[in-house]
Length: 396
Ligand code: AMP
Image (cartoon, rainbow, N blue to C red; front, top):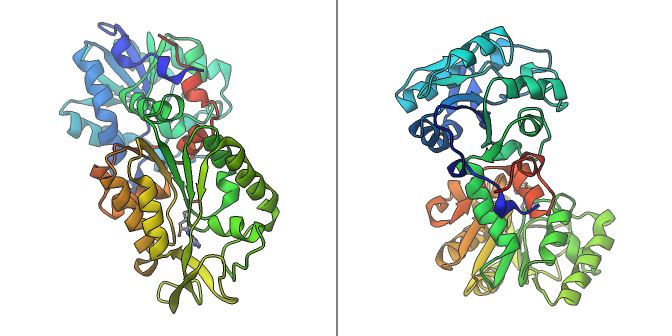
């Protein structure tokens, strides 16, 4: 699959057409009230572009994990209300997903008008990528646009199956994900440097393996670094450690050598007595963590080593914090790397989930070229896996 060749909304003639758009409206809610409308705001450019080009826009999304069909607490009605405020237009709400009300409202929808279907997971066939449900989605519209990157790693009826039945394109949000992450993996501005951190090697072994095929330098910090040390016979105290991944860790170190990839691990480590925000701490060399102490952050020498490796990079991919960055005492390593990435002048791409949250919380969001909107999806993308929600889209 050539992700850079996928059609985008700008390649579609939508004038006078009904366009079904799969959005990510999986917003945070408490007691029926939206607590963050970031995802709704993020969907606006695609919706606006389609309206400006004369389309009638039918939106759909999942929200939460309803188990037994329609449940009021998972209704998208609050999203329709917020979206209407943001667009400055009425947004019609269908009482069902593909049922009689959705069909009638979709049939009557005029160019410039917006309709939101109910939560796609109210239909049992959604997560099974049911062929009949996919056809029912397709029957509502003339064209399909997928703009839900956070769900693109799932083959569901509204994220993948529907595209078998309609001409399709990606929305502007997914287009940006592909432009940055796709280009970083397929045609990067070099040197390409990846920094991986976070808790576990087991979560990221696929990413490490795939990136070793692509990068010039791979930097590993965070909790996952200790498995690499332990695998080589060094003491890691009470740090995070996955003995069943030693073989894979050694294999990755060997792969880096074979591929001529520079592989950097921490040279010093901030250790703590206990896994606690205020625990006693000290900095030690990474190859001699004392018994009874736990690695919590990269040390100052490492911060400099890693920052130096980022200088002159053409592209940087970063996924996972360098330590327990939720706690101020152990956030300095992650902040140092965020600063170095921001100052590098490189194209900087932040993988979703915790790293995106850390970059946002630490105030570096606007210094990065691209922060992925998908946690699981961006990891699978970096693993080199084909994402069903993107693979299903027509090429130019
Ligand atoms: P991930 O979801 O894999 O990116 O992991 C993020 C989590 O890894 C965060 O909650 C961090 O607190 C945690 N983490 C990073 N470094 C360490 C460490 N040295 N020890 C324990 N947890 C860590």
